[in-house]
Length: 98
Image (cartoon, rainbow, N blue to C red; front, side, top):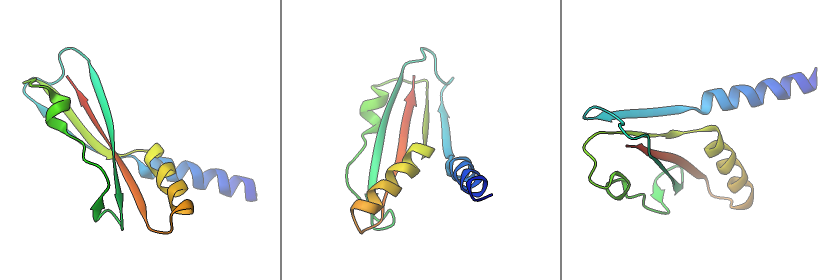
């Protein structure tokens, strides 16, 4: 029973962690080329540790899709970093499809 509860908790964590914001610009992706980057934050998302340059990722394309959100991998990174660094670390994934 304990293993079942742990397994269900992990499944709920991954399903609940997937929150994505999608913006389709122009006619949407035309070539299928995808570029992905990860943005890191500390102190409950208040202080960014790095900057993801979406303009460089778009590279002048007029038709593309921009997705930002927290995926299951981001939750695992946050949990692992939280064990190592006592401050709250979080991340989000930024994906541009041209």
